[in-house]
Image (cartoon, rainbow, N blue to C red; front, side, top):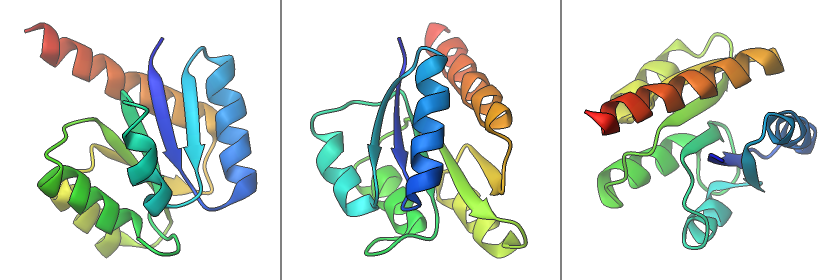
Length: 127
């Protein structure tokens, strides 16, 4: 089973995503900010990270930059952001995001995008 780390400060969104993804047979760990995510990464090696952009302490963009450039990790990362934040979305892609999902979102779209990202990684690693 694939492991997913969700970094999201909105408790309702966090619990809904965990519920939906668990029903799809993913192993899901959640944290409410990027500071806690760094700690969680030491014990939980996710196959994919789903992160909000606007969070307290460390933004999703700062997390993405650190994860890609300092920790040198290539785990797929999907960012969640509000509509109308084109500059932030572009910056996320420049920092190494694999995909983005605009809020508000359909939970089924999130599941499909996660499965697609994981399938792409599986194909690349198989080559």
